[in-house]
Image (tube, one colour):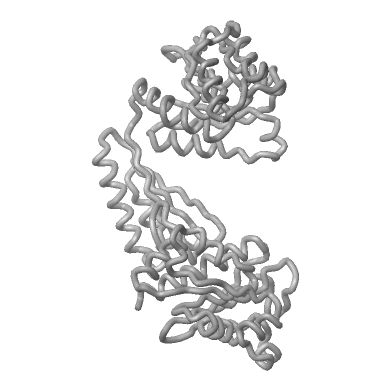
Length: 421
């Protein structure tokens, strides 16, 4: 059984709004065992919507639609759906009560424009919206497709993400599961850092080639990391789960030095957990990352228990005055050097009175590189209670990716040190 997702909105086509709905819907449907056959994005144009609805119905048994059912004039999905299904809008008393209750909770009176939200297609099952005024709409229509039995299901939802997500979780996915009984599916993601996608593929090629037919591997690279997602399908949930875990264990034996976690594990959270277990404190001294490492660390709830602060020493004067880097060191070796990041780490460790420090200096780009130190050259130092050590990396020529990669590399360097001591 195939599912197609249609996202409606001119703002999606011009890039004004990122289409997060499609990725979220695809993920949730996949987790429930359904196959998403196609994503389609179209603008707020009646002819385009009608054509997309018909073509999607020919390809898929279920068509999920988001967007275009708000109260403003550019929201034409509801009236277009009436044309497609040969029905008309009628006033729905229950829907209006919901609109009144929502506005009462917010301390507002219902306007005529908002009252229009209570008009629903006569030939649809309306889906309650607990967070907004636009109800969802469930239709079923005969689409002549050779070999297909039963009607095609169309479900229209708001484009507002949290409103759509609630409908999907509370009603739509459970109803589809009851009707179609999809196969069990189990995903497990292996998080790796410190190796590129192509090099990783070479190392695990033999293991990948011998995966059972019921398990698929996907490479999901991001700046600074590669996620390896194992997806298993089958009739028996317990067997699928066990088989995926077995293959994940084999993989962990092949590349233990690159794996830092699974599924939703974040390096910054893992570092924080280790610091709390050791009752140790951390600070950062950052140049090229401009505080990004500190941002990642403090994005973890409870990080104040171990993170004391950061010195963003972007300018050499700040390196000297706030971190005690010697002018002679800067003159002889340059700001991007092992000697400087070591002195930055020592200075931050002393001034901020912490157990551990991450210090970093590099050439993020796109300018500033030289023959000896091209763009992407980065030095990272870790100060621990016992020692200070540094490592050099060459990340690339993209500024944003360099900052992200450098930050993750630094966090993983600290994580490995915490685990080994």
